[in-house]
Length: 189
Ligand code: SF4
Image 1 (spheres, helix red, strand yellow):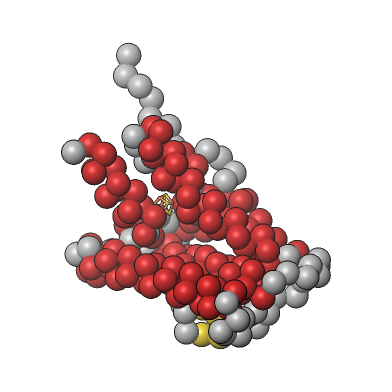
Image 2 (spheres, protein in one colour; image 1 turned 90 degrees about the vertical axis):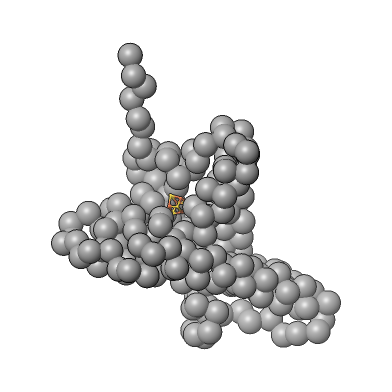
């Protein structure tokens, strides 16, 4: 008997919505993004396959939800050619570099924290209203806002792509998907 292929677990999109909603409760919840980035690789190292992408990714579930009722346009050349995947990888790498660099500088007292949302590294917005006012060191506040901003920026981009093209077109350029694909091929070598 052939093994039945299993898709994403139902209802995972709620985790994506909850992540952004929790930012209004306390921006410190934004640090859960670190877990979201680590889990795909932890599962990959155990299962030797992209279990996260196949079964557990809340963002993929969210994109399926928002993109399912829309007409499809042909995928743009920048995505089919693979260029966008590498641009996104650079964007992700630079973002992580800026986040760790600025957080370290703030912890050392060399820089002011940026306690507000900033989209796509360059577009400053506002701080989020907070239900819980927790006193934390400036570097932690900064780190939380930077992670929230990165997650929000990529979710906005992924949502626009899902509405124009197909729901999970983001997966073709997702840095986590790209890096887990590379890690998998290294494991199989
Ligand atoms: S490629 Fe990215 S968005 Fe798509 S399922 Fe994998 S981790 Fe989730």
